[in-house]
Image (tube, rainbow, N blue to C red; front, side):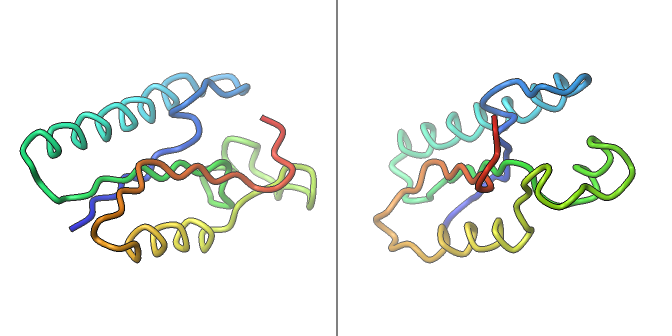
Length: 113
């Protein structure tokens, strides 16, 4: 069995945009909870795997609201696609039972932070 938590790179560092501190704090909490759960399961001798997937900016309505309501000009701000995150989940779920993927961080090529 595998649990995966979708986090964010914002859970590992504070972003550069005003107003993102609460979002970053919530994602940092997910990061810490994931590691705490993993350690508790190991202590219990469980074979349950726990993975955190932390993407950078993904082309979703949320990122568009953070960046402004209009379309993001092509190439100005590189974005991941939802399928990229789905592929990461598929990878994690497809690993052999003895493999523990702790963390996957995914960023688009050209992301500056």
